Image 1 (cartoon, rainbow, N blue to C red):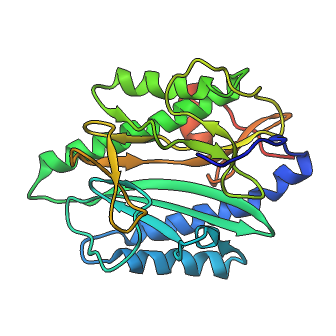
Image 2: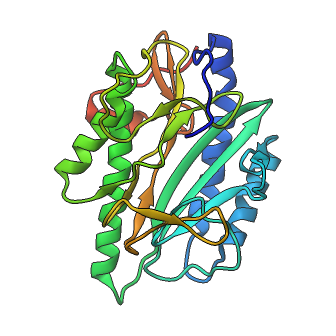
Length: 278
């Protein structure tokens, strides 16, 4: 993301431990939202659910700390990819809904996103197509996390994400929106690409903490910003999915701070065992 700046991107062991609480709280907020996504619920109602979980857990919604943004989540539906503003929109059967959320606890941040496809018995082919899009995007995220566990340099992550997505068929990987470092600020250096680039990027070593977040479409990668000046939508109107986790590298390995088990269940098939931050 633009404007992340250049500074020391590596955190101390004590600072990495402070990343755990906001990560878990972010996961809990997304769990609560996921459980309520169904036909008839509005995106602003989902926003209120996430806010309550975060505030009741002793944190504050870090999205609301972004200048000009006043909500706890981003709720992006169908052709909207990211940064969708919660409001009166009613979720319908067959919708593909991406929820991005973050919590700040004692000045440290978590950031994560999920995608949910709402069942629709009358349109099984549409639901299956959208579910496959979500599944491919989610699994590509875990391939990126697994690559981080083995990488010497950060941009190996993007190559792993791209390779997996390309192996699954024809999908569009957004290039204008990428992942980022995370810590005292929700968005920090370095940039985390979701596709292969020439530059190797910074060294992967203890203290690196990043948010990996592939954004993938059923069509092209061109997007536009809606009139609300926030929501990013596909230019061709095809559906999109967004998955994200915050991941810390420490002396013993990696730990997904926004996953309750550190990412163990999803990383096991990829030959990676996450290690808790001591």
